[in-house]
Image 1 (tube, rainbow, N blue to C red):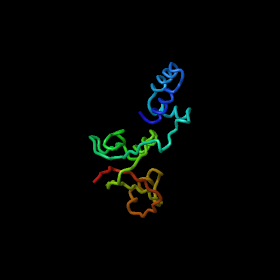
Image 2: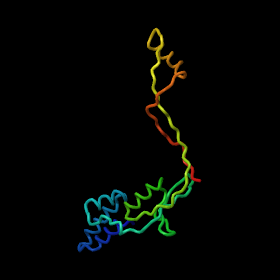
Image 3: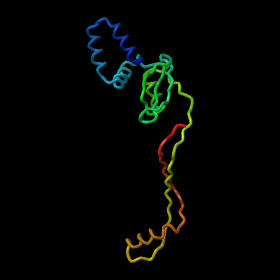
Image 4: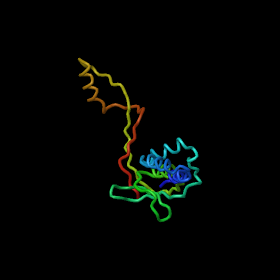
Length: 160
């Protein structure tokens, strides 16, 4: 149970009308965790977390059957598991009242592909626009290009 849920449960326990508190508890806790937390914080600002309310958790990377994954640890106890990145784990920690303490950086090798887009004009003698395009394509390798833009994509990450 996250800290917002804990605070809200304490609040419900303090209500005089426990029948109404029980109904409210059933409705609120039937919602998915993120939706429930957002609803409580939005409509009950007194339940907004102060960073000092949380426990300090460490973000730890590990290898699972699908590759790299990250988990949040409090001491030797796993708080939450299966994140796709350190940033995702830290965001979840903050949203749930924990104070994320990032692990020491690790070395990664990332394969990058740079695709450059260069432009030039080629003058050709042709009988139609289609023939002009074909001739320009044939000559394209014999010209210099002024590169104006590039795209970058990654092709895998390895931890080593």
